[in-house]
Picture (spheres, rainbow, N blue to C red):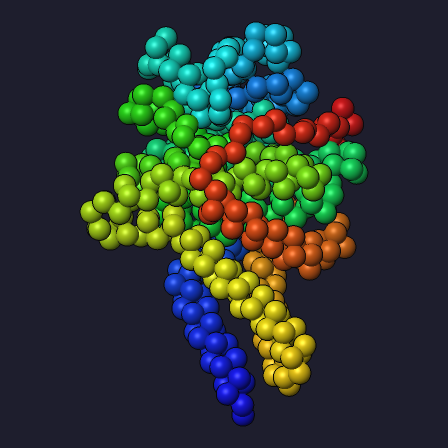
Length: 430
């Protein structure tokens, strides 16, 4: 064996050991993947709490009607919840729609992010009557609620958790227009299964801090009073800021799969990519923002557990980065060695193939776990599911350059408007 071959093999062994170490570190997170078939206990709350539904709705007149219609169909008593809609401009068409539905309107012209809009609304509610509401639910304007959403969110309050999250499903599956469901929306829609069924469900069962998501989320009134509003405004991922602050302030979180909210996915690759860039930039910004505070916390067993579950994604970045670097290094080495006439080019090419295959299979098994966890709720045809199963690992690799750029970038993304999908229900044709 030549010296060059020995070096190539040694690098491969080193990278293999490091990759295995990352996998071992991540095993506690993956435990939840094998518990996805176990149903949550159903809760019942005899108390009918007074709930405020908060809807940030800047320029959302085209889609908010569907959400408000779903609020009208709630099984929860109408007298036990109010709707608060937040807009940016006094001429926003959303205002008239909101008034027709009997909702309260908050005009916040200086809003520059969703967190600020929510904060102003909550401050208005607290100023008017701090004890009027028992809980506050934040819902994005492009979502739609299951008829029992508020009823089940109220039931979830029987858990005594301070922050409760609903199960996110893909709204596009319910849209009549076939253009609403594309390979991009079908692939990106799996993110909710990853976060909820593969992650938050297990975290809830062991009492660990959930990955909080900024729609379909309920705050008990004591949390909002403690915070004095909604202070998560430094990035465009206010929900990730909240997640880290839950660890710092020891807020209890709970995922409740019986409360269902339908989230819109863009069928456009361009818009999907824009969302991913905004999301990952915010995730990286939030991680930087709270890193020092997390380090300074007393290292109790509970704190260490919560830090692990809220920061373990960083090890995934390193694992993926290692495999990408290994693959690219061997691919480039194979080309150079071939041009120089060295026979070891084939060995390098083999390792490049192994690196890429390992990366693909890692994402493939993640995709497969999503289908096992939520097969019935992924309402696309069998053949569409098969296409997603094999293509999603490639699609998911789009995050690699996005995360790389986010880690290098020190400036946050702007709060841009995302194109919406016109909703026509498959069930009602309305």
